[in-house]
Image 1 (cartoon, rainbow, N blue to C red):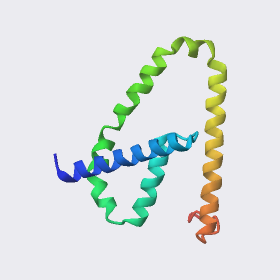
Image 2 (image 1 turned 30 degrees about the vertical axis):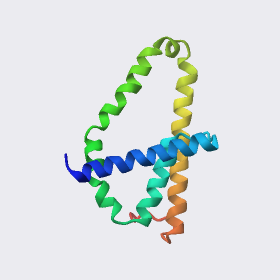
Image 3 (image 1 turned 45 degrees about the vertical axis):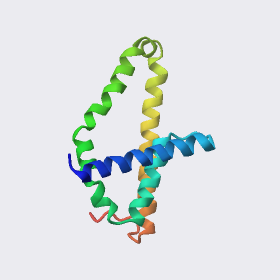
Image 4 (image 1 turned 180 degrees about the horizontal axis):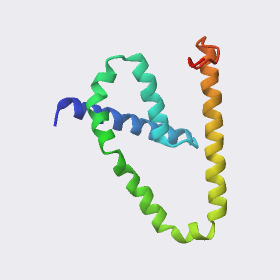
Length: 125
């Protein structure tokens, strides 16, 4: 195991820990890993060489990304009875959530495009 991998995985876990601590201390309704990810994102802008140092760990994690879906699948099977009883509200929430996410993504993309001076043009015109 290379030292770059160990350094990278340590940095990622430390940012997750910092996010958890901030969430619990400030009693925020946001998951700790999300705050840790935002802090890591800011750090990547401030420390340009950090990206190369995290490359080995992030590439290794991405190759095993599908394993992270196993707990979700187990949760679905463990609560299958609840899903069977409340399938309609769950389906409506999934469809509306997806549509709202698509709309928000499109609006943010247009806003950023205008902010960067592209005027909302996609380059296909």
